[in-house]
Image 1 (tube, rainbow, N blue to C red):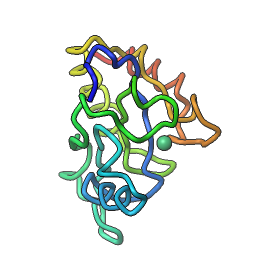
Image 2 (cartoon, rainbow, N blue to C red):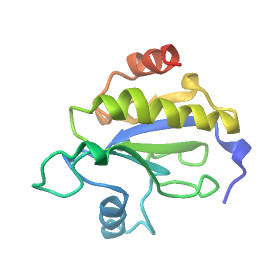
Image 3 (tube, rainbow, N blue to C red):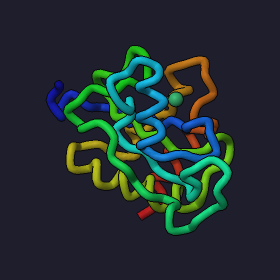
Image 4 (cartoon, rainbow, N blue to C red):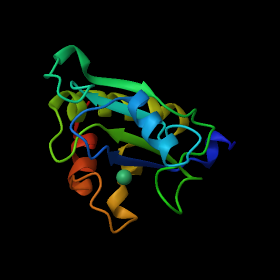
Length: 146
Ligand SMILES: [Zn+2]
């Protein structure tokens, strides 16, 4: 466990899958030996199950994973001071995910002193391309939204 004041970064990931939700990621991460979903939040993209068609009602839902006081398992070397948010998707994300759910979530994290300036992508700390989004552009987008 950690103190909320230890958290200084928000790190964005993608699931590298075209479907999924926090339950599926929980399952995947347990298979990899984690105790549970390594992220603090998962944002759905409207396709929860493989092979199902897009459902707008299931798009942009923010699902809680680990408690914020629980250290995540998502970015080697940066877990103790960060929150991990996973966007379901691979290369394309929905408008609801990027322009509604994510900015709203970042706004609520203002409660613990975090802002759009504290947002990074996994790729900023790793050689992996995750989350397959230009994170400088993402920060700019998040700052420009109300
Ligand atoms: Zn990642």
